[in-house]
Length: 74
Image (cartoon, rainbow, N blue to C red):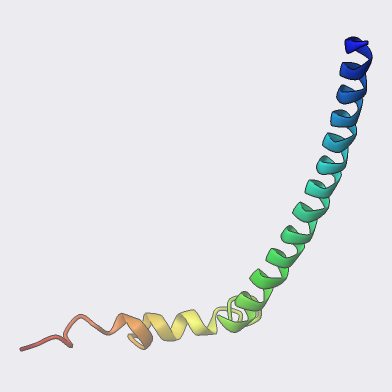
């Protein structure tokens, strides 16, 4: 009698484990899609995707955040 209950318990546990695996795969896919969308928006906001390098050339001339070398003179 104990072996029958143990078999039923093992079957229920394997079913729950399979359902949990499917849910985990679905959640992982949704999260990866959301992260890809987020990365695309950040890329657009930071002008890295469609600028063609024009933003980088202005930074190399001394504009933006890179001009802090001689600013702190007390």
